Amino acid sequence: MVTRFAPSPTGRLHVGHAWSALLAMDMAHARGGAFRLRIEDIDGTRSRPEHVAGIVEDLRWLGIAWDGDIVFQSARLDHYEAALQRLEAMGLLYPCFCTRADIMASSAAPHGPEGPVYPGTCRGLGDGERSRRIAAGEPHAWRIDMAQAAERAGPLRWDALPFPAEDGARAQPVQARPLLAGDVVLARKDAPASYHLSCTLDDAAMGVTHVLRGDDLRGATDIHRLIQALLGLPSPAYIHHPLLLGADGRRLAKRDGSIALADLRAEGADPRQLASDLRQARFPIGISLASA
Ligand code: GLU
Image: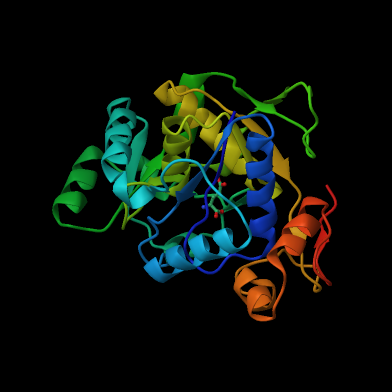
């Protein structure tokens, strides 16, 4: 068994991250497996090296130990590029010149599990216009033509394991519905990969057999399953855990400084006690588990 924790270095870790990382570590180590750490640092605008150091410090403080070297996505750009070229050669990608404002302004954009669904504005551009705008240096992302990709891959399922993990639990096949997300971005304007592409490729490259992550990423799992099928990658089992809510009833986010591990440490929290509490799903005051 290989599990992983894959934070983005866009802020310090909060209690929810710590809980997720502890669960993933314990799950692998209880079965003689490996727990890996991957830093998802290709968001050039929001990733910060000081947050990488902070994450490592926070994890060590809590007694979270990973196996092998830390994998940095910023060191794997060539792999993403190569996969992108394969998908492009299959005719499944198109350049998208839209800005965020263009997409927001499109009243047609319905909401999917991943936020507003791209209305497909650039899908219909002719080859001539595409080449001309790329040659002129117009910034562009690469989107997947989801309808075509889904048709090529055929019906797909991913394996879901229950949360909390039960020994001997059988995986339930879940039908993947990638079309709900629309034509998601696979390469961003500022990076040769998006979260969906890099995460899927890295989980495969790192030999991850069990992905444990928050319920908010179920929609992403559908997309990752599709990318696996297109690129001939193995599909791990997925365990989606409930999110943690703050006192305001909203999901924890890096904005809620009060529950950052760094703050708990500064307040003199005992890391062993905290880790033990989290393992029993006992959370600091005001924090609760969202109901499934
Ligand atoms: N970097 C992503 C995050 O922090 C990882 C999500 C995942 O586990 O796939 O949300």
